[in-house]
Image (cartoon, rainbow, N blue to C red; front, top):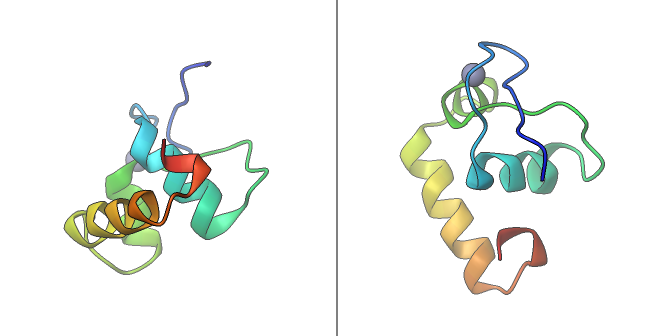
Length: 65
Ligand SMILES: [Zn+2]
């Protein structure tokens, strides 16, 4: 997997952030947000997003494996 850079701050986009972008924004996203910028964009917090990611994972969402 190619390393992704955040479209806002150019920070590293980790696996969780990447999966969340695909799940919450665009399944075929080519540009990603890091967790901090995604939280900003969605007007939520990083903690909320991590929790969401856990939920999706527990639901068996393939993006979060
Ligand atoms: Zn960022």
